[in-house]
Amino acid sequence: MSVTGNTTLYDTTVYHIELQEKIHEPSCLHRGVCGFIHIVSGLQVKVTPAAEGQKTLTCSTTCTLTDNPTYIWYKNGQRLDEPTSQQYSVNSYYSDSYSCAVKGHADHHSPAVCVRGESCMNVTYTHQSICALKGSTVDISCFYTHPSWHNVTEVSWFNKWESGVTKDLSQDSEYTSRVEYHRQTDKDSILRITDLRESDSTEYKFRFTTNEARWGYSFPGTTLTVTGFQVKVTGGHQDKTLTCITTCTLTDNPTYIWYKNGQHLDESTSPQYKYSASSNYEDSYSCAVKGHEDIHSPAVCVQGQDCSRVTYTKRRICVLKGSTVDISCTYVGYDTVTSSLWFSPKRSASWTNKLTPEDLTRDPGYAGRVEYAGRESGTYRGPFTLRITDLREEDSAEYRFTFKTYNFEWGHSFPGTTLSVTGLQVKVTPAAEGQKTLTCSTT
Image (cartoon, rainbow, N blue to C red; front, top):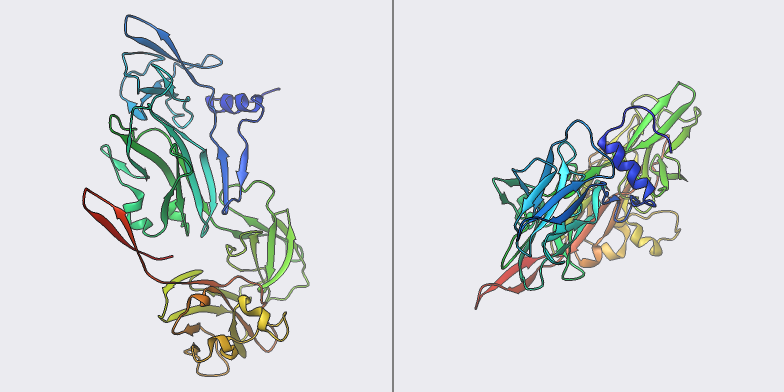
């Protein structure tokens, strides 16, 4: 192995990992997610006996660090103000764990070690960083341990902390109805966030409390980056290349899907698509990844700015059974729409021609419950609104819009708006002695 140029602690870390039989393996696109398994930094805490009842902790590396680094020590997940040296003398309880890092690289910390015995407070995150698609669902997970004589009294996930006070995500208004806690055993925890937004990009941490101790709030957690797709157009007037880009790297060789004018066009493991100069100024292009077709890029024009594009006002809608919903979209293009309709792929079994969508207003399953709100003439530029009344749970489906102009027809395979129709349920959970907590929940 050869190394050129200036190296840093981070460089040393990466090379050490590569020599460890690919400890750092990427995984991607589970629920629209790319993850990187927790990086083993090359730092280790060595424990040696000292004076009676004491231990000396040494933050060791596989090679000597230069520039007199400043060390960071963590006790039970909490950063200690002192010491900043490579060695630290402690007189600890059996439940205490310690970890170390180097200032400037705090996210590359050592595994936590028990100073006494083999069972102490510890949290290990499954991924150090995760890249997830906007609108998708992500699972952020960890494993935790504690002495067998401790009883866990509280668990929580958080991404904000101030003066030692953390805010439980399940109680955070920014995540209302989008956060769930799950577990597979009594030693793991999964934070599930649905309908991801770019504003969700931040670091997430887990905290637990027992009857005798509490895990700290400053130990590094999992950093989430939420990204969407964008189509980048490069090249000259005749030959152009379209590239489906994200702000973080998707791995596992995802299959890219291309749409032209709302119609499925091509699939490839390459994020690039070669554009033919024979295309019209009306043509627009969009991209997505197989398995997550509903999370696509905005449609872009390749020639000029007057191409035909459809944009749905909302990608997902959740409404109560028996209510009324408006599903809408807007159209941008050079030509005026001459005819249009809404349809649901879920109803394709009842279509006369399985490849030709049929107007929902003519579907017996929606008889008397569907109208196109606001459309007052045959020629119309939008917005286009589908109104469904007296909603039923079987109305839960994806709804798409298609149209024709004098010269053009919008395709049928471009993802639309997904509707979920739900009822209300009261969930009863135990609270303080003699009390119950009632939660009004939806699906």
